[in-house]
Amino acid sequence: MEHSQEMMMASALASQSASPIASPPASRVQTRPLNGAVGMEIVGVDLRDDLSQADFETIRDAWRAHCVILLRGQTLDEAAQVRFAQRFGELGKVLHAHEGRSSLPGVMYISNIRENGKLIGALPDGEMYFHSDQCYIENPSVGTMLYAMEVPSKGGDTIFANMFAAYDALPDDLKTKIEGRVALNVYDYQNAATVRGSTPREGVPSFAHPMVKAHPFTGRKALYFNRLMTHHVVGMDAQESKALLARLFDHQEQERFLYRHVWTPGDLVMWDNRSALHARSDFDSSQRRLMRRTVVVREHQD
Image 1 (cartoon, rainbow, N blue to C red):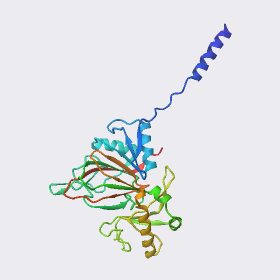
Image 2: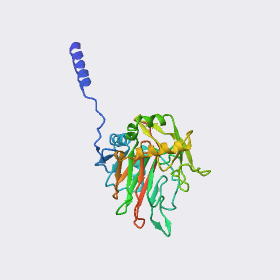
Image 3: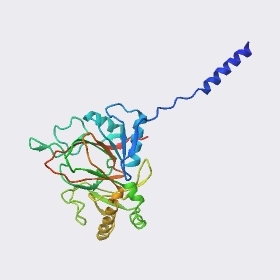
């Protein structure tokens, strides 16, 4: 009898050990390239729904690796946009608030619309050169998220440039010249960094960053300077710095590194400021443009 009981117990234990261990649910998110240069479109996701961790990680990993993600056809209020942005990390404070427009901290509007004679958003009109958000402070934002609400019939596009690819394709002589170098980035639209050789006004925000940075999660190297805000290469003769930056700007803005996004209401685009530059094309200032922005200043660790 004892022998029979032992056999039964052994059989039960063997059956338990052979049972498959439940795997975490796989992501159902689909992705497809925006073009051959930069970015991934996220397909089949409604951000009003709760995303599983697997689905979110697919989106986050696409953003880290491909610099830009696009989700079309979204219907988002402020709370839904903030909830999604907070999955990535801590949101930044709005530096240029517009009274009464946003009910939540960390939400900023980009718009040329006026109510009672006052702009309801920041950065209203016109073309904007390539840049990386907040590169003029010590700890720049890691990600910017923009949601389209109203767009002009033509223009106001956002053009993205892949700085991973730009570094990889940089000629060896330029890689050698910028190795270990830092460049000063300046936020001063009145005396723009684009006027090379000028002296930044006293008190304007500025910070010197390495010209090449390794992404903290992918390890890939990316160029970190831009035409709008990079003023000069620190420790280099002014004329040499000016000539070097001119070559570098022309290199990083080549068509082979670019994706132009033509906005449609309901588009949500998020880009990684550590690996992508962005610019804005001009548009008719008489046409309304309204975008909602959130910025991630510190990413959650894996």
